[in-house]
Length: 316
Ligand code: VAH
Image (tube, rainbow, N blue to C red; front, side):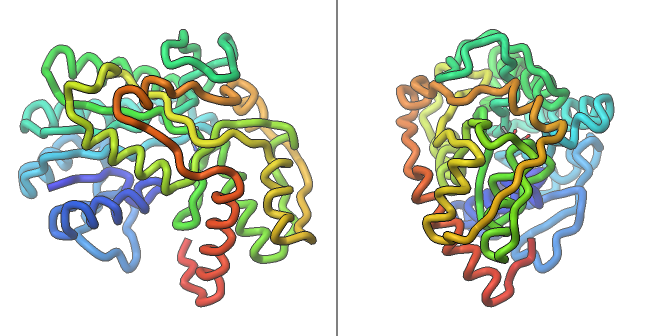
């Protein structure tokens, strides 16, 4: 039985459905600190900073895998540094300890390109870069990677991790990240509103379509243990693009779509991150291969969002 923390988040919403497909709806326990309206499956309210509450759920449902998606992301995290550090670390320590004590088979830990600072090569940033993160979120994720590696080496706990780029999907909204503009822009396009972007037009960032991110997660978790050489976290790459490149991709379908730029504090976060990622280890160890380029991402976003807005099933 699989437990997901942060199941109501941008990634958790989609990953929960995928895991229900793979393991069966009765073998997935979705949890989040906030209730989810019209959730289909087993859902439990969980504040993952509460060790006892997590332990009780793991025992009650005989959990064998944990996907730990609960976290405060980069932009939101900068508004409250210490609470962000406390929440991001406490929740992961709880997951690691409960997994160790109750013989959980596998743990998934999401890391991020936010672990990189601008002390390194920002084009095709290598897996083994020296990490100097410039956000509390990035510091917590870099620390989490070391703990994942420690629990693997010391307790043989099978913790696996990906350094996600910005994720773009139609099923959910961003969760307080610096890459959220790349989701919001599509909602403006569909609703024929001018989009005000909080980053400069030429800010290139590593991104990935949601379906690729989900497929990468499942591929990593199902890879034979002996193939995995990296136990901190794997670089993975999808596509890199800037707001102006994304806007012109949208204008191919919506020629009248307009974008304006009003950079805010998130610009300095974006400036500290890589522009593109070298994911050769993931390709070597577990055959990673993205399938979505900018054009396919744009088409899929516009087609699916139009559907959601037309039969107003939009419950974002
Ligand atoms: C964020 N979407 O912006 C998340 C992610 C790399 C980006 O970590 O914080």
